[in-house]
Image (cartoon, rainbow, N blue to C red; front, side, top):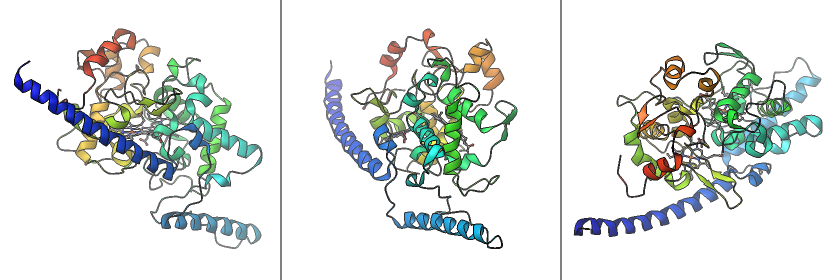
Length: 385
Ligand code: HEC
Ligand code: HEC
């Protein structure tokens, strides 16, 4: 080993140490933040009802809900009184009811079960989950958070025509799609999403209906979906995204993108690619969708922290790795190239591309995954492309 590499080796050890320290500090910070805002992905906390709000914004939200309840009572007694207004907080976002208002009785039970499925999908809907994700991993705050495809924003815009399957989708159809693609149901114990009319759909819809209490039907609400990101002149580039990833994401999602599990094997930080992630048919595999999600929600607790260009590039980076196959490819018996022509001919992602000596879209039994991992995981001081 010559002197230069020797020196850079020493430096890199130091840098590694510093980054490890910074990483520990960030994790701790994220922990406090998440606990404070009730967004910790652990089941235990996810199950506890929200604490009483304290900030000014929370106060305005609480007032808005109180006014709604008051106006409803008045209207019931006096049909000529004013219609209740949509409860809106100081940020002009719809305010869903807080968890402590979940009613008693059968309806309340259904709402609670729906919430549980949404937050702890891998245990509460285990039969139909084929990866290491939960619904709430991509719909933050148990489906409440504006800018994170909140459930109250979705409820009132279904049934709806979707180009993806060229038909009018009921909410159940939509939820089935989430299991099929985002939760990779084909690899689940049952081999597919919950069958039609399954109680899981009733419970999830009960939770959604209840979260949307007081929201107008047919109205596209502010905060719905992910805030779309303007196209960039520079487009997106997964190679540029590597550095963004290493500096902003790897501390939680891992240098190998596989996230982290706790000692009980529960996923604390979800994987972003590989066999445990969303599949090639999921909305998140498309770079514009992932970029919009990331800009508004990641790094966790730091909204709009990345520049638009960084969000584009890091979205490209996480979506440039192997992930489970598009279920339509398997079901329709197509090759990856045929699937690309039929479903992915839109330049919005890397499906069907050849990157890192791998044909993106093929099943994992055609990839030596541990060898791939060993060869392509980043290291902290690595600028290799
Ligand atoms: C890997 C991330 C991910 C996971 C996991 C996930 N979703 Fe989604 N979901 C998305 C994306 C992306 C969209 C599309 C958002 C958009 O563009 O408006 C979406 C959309 C939705 C919508 C429609 C939203 C709207 O405003 O039209 C619903 C409802 C939904 N998801 C429910 C679920 C449920 C229930 C689960 C679990 C069974 C789930 N999602 C799991 C990423 C995810
Ligand atoms: C402080 C820890 C932390 C950091 C840093 C962080 N994330 Fe996340 N990320 C999370 C957690 C936790 C979730 C799941 C959120 C939940 O369940 O409430 C998540 C969810 C996601 C998801 C959706 C779920 C999935 O696995 O596909 C994506 C995509 C994502 N993060 C990308 C990124 C990117 C890109 C960065 C860097 C710009 C980043 N994250 C930085 C903690 C973090």
